[in-house]
Image (cartoon, rainbow, N blue to C red; front, top):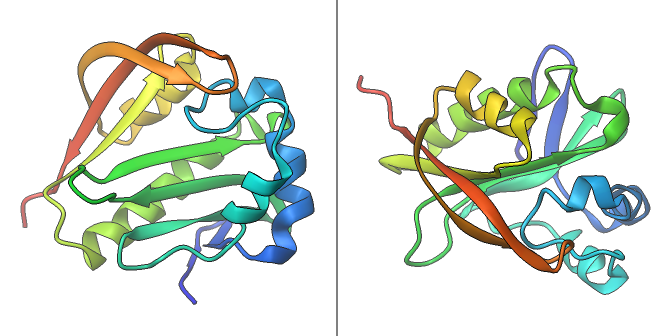
Amino acid sequence: MTRLITERLEMRLCQPSDFDALYDLVSDFDVVRMTSSWPHPADPDLTRERCQPFDAAQGMVGVVLLDDTLIGSMGLAQKPDEDPHLGYMFARPYWGNGYATEMCHALIDHCWATYDWPMICADAFADNPASVHVLEKLGFEELDSSTGHSVARGESSLLQRFQLLRPQS
Protein backbone atom coordinates (compact mmCIF):
# COMPACT_ATOMS: atom_id res chain seq x y z
CA MET A 1 0.00 0.00 0.00
CA THR A 2 1.33 3.42 -0.96
CA ARG A 3 2.13 5.69 1.95
CA LEU A 4 3.37 9.23 1.65
CA ILE A 5 5.53 10.47 4.52
CA THR A 6 6.50 14.09 5.13
CA GLU A 7 8.37 15.67 8.02
CA ARG A 8 5.22 15.76 10.19
CA LEU A 9 2.52 13.78 8.41
CA GLU A 10 1.58 10.51 6.79
CA MET A 11 -0.98 9.86 4.06
CA ARG A 12 -2.30 6.40 3.31
CA LEU A 13 -5.30 4.81 1.67
CA CYS A 14 -8.47 4.96 3.71
CA GLN A 15 -9.60 1.70 5.25
CA PRO A 16 -12.76 0.51 7.02
CA SER A 17 -11.14 0.99 10.44
CA ASP A 18 -10.99 4.77 9.72
CA PHE A 19 -14.79 5.03 9.79
CA ASP A 20 -15.20 6.59 13.26
CA ALA A 21 -12.49 9.21 12.79
CA LEU A 22 -13.59 10.08 9.25
CA TYR A 23 -17.23 10.28 10.34
CA ASP A 24 -16.22 12.72 13.10
CA LEU A 25 -14.39 14.84 10.51
CA VAL A 26 -17.30 14.97 8.07
CA SER A 27 -19.81 15.67 10.85
CA ASP A 28 -18.38 19.20 11.19
CA PHE A 29 -20.42 21.56 9.01
CA ASP A 30 -17.60 24.11 8.84
CA VAL A 31 -15.39 21.44 7.25
CA VAL A 32 -17.83 19.91 4.76
CA ARG A 33 -19.42 23.16 3.64
CA MET A 34 -16.15 23.85 1.82
CA THR A 35 -16.44 20.58 -0.13
CA SER A 36 -18.69 19.76 -3.04
CA SER A 37 -19.76 16.19 -2.27
CA TRP A 38 -19.95 15.67 1.50
CA PRO A 39 -23.46 16.18 2.94
CA HIS A 40 -24.48 17.62 6.28
CA PRO A 41 -25.57 16.05 8.46
CA ALA A 42 -23.01 13.37 7.78
CA ASP A 43 -24.20 10.22 6.03
CA PRO A 44 -22.82 7.05 7.67
CA ASP A 45 -23.35 4.96 4.53
CA LEU A 46 -21.44 7.41 2.33
CA THR A 47 -18.67 7.64 4.92
CA ARG A 48 -18.45 3.85 5.08
CA GLU A 49 -18.31 3.68 1.27
CA ARG A 50 -15.48 6.22 1.18
CA CYS A 51 -13.53 4.23 3.77
CA GLN A 52 -12.87 1.58 1.14
CA PRO A 53 -9.43 1.63 -0.49
CA PHE A 54 -9.31 3.71 -3.67
CA ASP A 55 -8.34 2.34 -7.10
CA ALA A 56 -4.68 3.33 -7.58
CA ALA A 57 -5.12 3.36 -11.36
CA GLN A 58 -7.17 6.56 -10.96
CA GLY A 59 -4.92 8.36 -8.47
CA MET A 60 -4.44 8.44 -4.72
CA VAL A 61 -7.17 9.21 -2.20
CA GLY A 62 -6.75 8.66 1.50
CA VAL A 63 -6.46 9.99 4.99
CA VAL A 64 -3.86 12.27 6.52
CA LEU A 65 -2.43 11.32 9.89
CA LEU A 66 -0.50 13.27 12.51
CA ASP A 67 1.04 10.96 15.13
CA ASP A 68 -1.46 8.23 14.13
CA THR A 69 -4.42 10.61 14.55
CA LEU A 70 -6.63 11.16 11.50
CA ILE A 71 -6.63 14.92 10.93
CA GLY A 72 -7.82 15.11 7.34
CA SER A 73 -8.58 13.53 4.02
CA MET A 74 -7.02 14.28 0.66
CA GLY A 75 -7.09 13.00 -2.86
CA LEU A 76 -5.75 13.53 -6.33
CA ALA A 77 -7.60 11.44 -8.88
CA GLN A 78 -8.83 11.36 -12.44
CA LYS A 79 -12.38 10.30 -13.22
CA PRO A 80 -13.06 9.03 -16.75
CA ASP A 81 -13.21 11.87 -19.29
CA GLU A 82 -12.17 14.48 -16.71
CA ASP A 83 -8.92 16.16 -15.75
CA PRO A 84 -7.14 15.01 -12.58
CA HIS A 85 -8.51 16.89 -9.59
CA LEU A 86 -7.02 17.72 -6.18
CA GLY A 87 -9.23 17.96 -3.10
CA TYR A 88 -8.59 18.08 0.64
CA MET A 89 -10.22 18.76 3.98
CA PHE A 90 -8.81 18.98 7.49
CA ALA A 91 -10.36 19.03 10.95
CA ARG A 92 -10.69 22.54 12.38
CA PRO A 93 -8.13 22.10 15.20
CA TYR A 94 -5.49 21.53 12.50
CA TRP A 95 -6.26 24.53 10.28
CA GLY A 96 -3.53 27.12 9.83
CA ASN A 97 -0.57 24.82 10.53
CA GLY A 98 0.58 24.28 6.94
CA TYR A 99 -0.55 20.64 6.92
CA ALA A 100 -2.55 20.95 3.68
CA THR A 101 0.35 22.55 1.84
CA GLU A 102 2.85 20.02 3.20
CA MET A 103 0.87 16.94 2.27
CA CYS A 104 -0.36 18.35 -1.04
CA HIS A 105 3.29 18.85 -2.09
CA ALA A 106 3.99 15.18 -1.36
CA LEU A 107 0.82 13.99 -3.09
CA ILE A 108 1.43 16.11 -6.20
CA ASP A 109 5.05 14.92 -6.43
CA HIS A 110 3.86 11.30 -6.11
CA CYS A 111 1.28 11.76 -8.86
CA TRP A 112 3.68 13.51 -11.25
CA ALA A 113 6.04 10.52 -10.79
CA THR A 114 3.28 7.93 -11.17
CA TYR A 115 0.87 9.24 -13.81
CA ASP A 116 1.37 10.97 -17.16
CA TRP A 117 -1.14 13.72 -16.46
CA PRO A 118 -0.35 17.02 -18.23
CA MET A 119 -2.06 19.08 -15.54
CA ILE A 120 -3.89 18.95 -12.23
CA CYS A 121 -7.05 20.94 -11.51
CA ALA A 122 -8.42 22.19 -8.21
CA ASP A 123 -11.34 24.32 -7.05
CA ALA A 124 -11.98 26.40 -3.98
CA PHE A 125 -15.14 28.15 -2.93
CA ALA A 126 -14.59 31.91 -3.02
CA ASP A 127 -15.47 32.18 0.69
CA ASN A 128 -12.57 29.85 1.55
CA PRO A 129 -9.51 32.13 1.27
CA ALA A 130 -7.35 29.67 3.23
CA SER A 131 -7.81 27.01 0.54
CA VAL A 132 -7.15 29.54 -2.22
CA HIS A 133 -3.93 30.47 -0.41
CA VAL A 134 -2.86 26.79 -0.22
CA LEU A 135 -3.38 26.38 -3.96
CA GLU A 136 -1.41 29.55 -4.69
CA LYS A 137 1.47 28.36 -2.48
CA LEU A 138 1.48 25.08 -4.41
CA GLY A 139 1.91 26.98 -7.68
CA PHE A 140 -1.62 26.63 -9.04
CA GLU A 141 -2.77 29.39 -11.37
CA GLU A 142 -6.29 30.71 -11.17
CA LEU A 143 -8.23 30.14 -14.39
CA ASP A 144 -11.62 31.68 -13.79
CA SER A 145 -14.60 31.48 -11.53
CA SER A 146 -17.85 29.65 -11.93
CA THR A 147 -20.63 28.34 -9.78
CA GLY A 148 -20.18 25.12 -7.85
CA HIS A 149 -22.62 23.13 -5.78
CA SER A 150 -21.97 22.14 -2.18
CA VAL A 151 -24.14 19.27 -0.98
CA ALA A 152 -23.62 20.34 2.66
CA ARG A 153 -24.73 23.91 1.96
CA GLY A 154 -27.56 22.74 -0.25
CA GLU A 155 -26.81 25.53 -2.68
CA SER A 156 -24.46 26.74 -5.35
CA SER A 157 -21.72 29.22 -4.51
CA LEU A 158 -18.99 31.09 -6.33
CA LEU A 159 -16.11 28.71 -7.09
CA GLN A 160 -12.58 29.66 -8.11
CA ARG A 161 -10.98 27.23 -10.58
CA PHE A 162 -7.23 26.53 -10.69
CA GLN A 163 -4.74 24.44 -12.64
CA LEU A 164 -1.16 23.30 -12.17
CA LEU A 165 0.77 22.30 -15.28
CA ARG A 166 3.24 19.41 -15.23
CA PRO A 167 6.75 20.74 -14.67
CA GLN A 168 9.02 20.63 -17.70
CA SER A 169 11.93 18.25 -17.23
